[in-house]
Image (cartoon, rainbow, N blue to C red; front, top):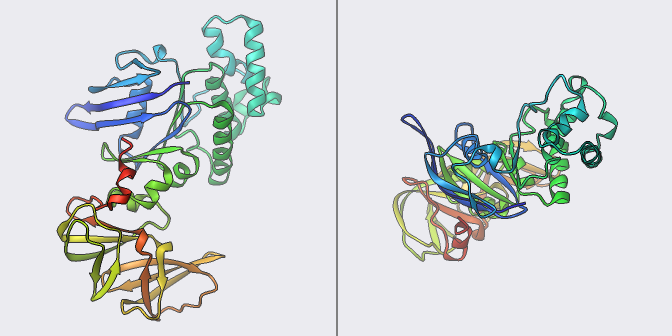
Length: 365
């Protein structure tokens, strides 16, 4: 397996820039997620790492070798596509063994290697069956088997579970992560599903409009989003945003919202004008003693918890509270926020005004 380094990677298609000067490092053995909405540049980035697209600018290193000008076949990687890309006229055994036959490996070694991979994937009983009659999940296992059998330096996966239904997709994501851990592979995985990325990934790059918005481990990205986009894209429900006009200075540790003072982490930098107060629903609590109040406009029961929607003086927000806490629509409630979990943003730039203690979150890339 291998470390992968991406330096200042850029891809232009005519006058359109799909990827804008992206840089990050994927460590040997990591399960690395490229996350973002459709059209953000994540698949183009993956294809440049794999050699299916040549970069307009920038460099890609795999296992210490600069490979930007090499073809995909010369990079020793395996690609798994969303739509499986199996050979329909071949059975399962023939599909998995095809890369080894192409390399001229002896038949006995091919047979042993295919049997080993089929055992890992739990499809030994399917080896002689045509792929056309398999379920979507079994087809994906065959596609994975064809990639694994080569023992490449790295695996590239472009939304490999996207064609599966929601229930089976969750099951396959667990299997895929367990398979990764068993093999110790370096895996680069594209998805638009933030829950899938948070569940499976060791590290995540969040992309938006061709740029890297943030790079880090899932918990850091969730707790300390670098921008309004990341804060909104990550989380279900997403972060609450309360808008206000004012100014904050470097080192400030509190702000005023509608006359109520709230403590915040000390700011790394200041800003003035339109500001955004960000807090996640689980860090909003109901507090009868708070002078900052809002009206409950909706409740959503979720079993052990409930989501309540509140109209506050600075905008609508959601709170995740215990299901046993009684709240009724139309009720006026006092609000409080966990001071250690508040993020301020400059609305004009979208950037987070991070505390010095948490600056390291953004220093991975």
